Length: 361
Image: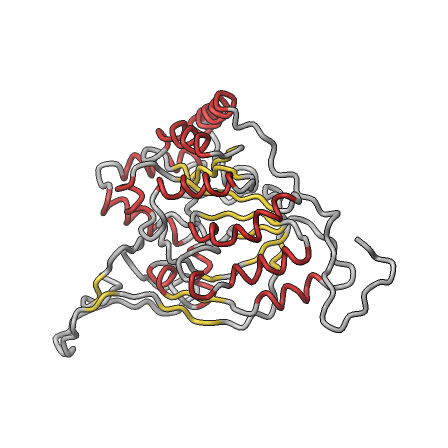
């Protein structure tokens, strides 16, 4: 039964359903009982609502991440990537991880002031902050709301290290801040690449920049002196895994210094959404792709255990890891991960503060 009203026309959307999240007591479906007044067909548009943030930093203890703190300028993501492992977070808001995740967004303006306050707390110890680890901070609505710009302005003023993950070209707008930070060893950017096939990309990640445009972003960031890591993610077995080496080659030619990869992750509601996507866009490969996914994750759609959730396990996972390591050596993508500096961290003076008489740093 459809979860989408028949009068809504979907254009450039990843999910094909809007099923209720796992915490909802009720499920809703569109059903014509013959009594409804016909509605004029209209296109499903994106709605961005504003949230007053009470906190900026989100802390984690995940041993397979390089950071223990992150910032989320937005909830939801208009890029609409069907494989996005962050989709289930929308269920915490009482919204669907399906179409709601990519059409009912929440921006958090004012987060810069909150972050400023948190970084000034007595006893705060600086360490790299991860941004873009949940939803993309440079998704299309950033053009209007500029929440990520707020965050970068604060981090630049504090000389605080940050690692950014994105597939959005709006990161180029902030080169005036990011380039000086990179010169101080304070920033690194990971640009995610999934496929070089433009048609496949448009179906998988309908509102994200096309592959060639992302490669151009790597070129521009690299030319500005910003260390760029090519993130081959997600690697989808039976659909994009054959592109691993060509993606790394293209990224290297564009200026990426190193590379990483993550296998397809299908937590909670994402599994059903992705399965439906396969049946619609690649029905002949659906059984093969899902069979290989289960081989990666011990017979399940997803294994959430640290250490295996991103790379998988078993024969095919081992072969992929070997291919990746061989390509890294061949292409010279062996530069170490950005060594972020923390010794430069210093809260900037606020209006009215008395400057230290002998502090000339």
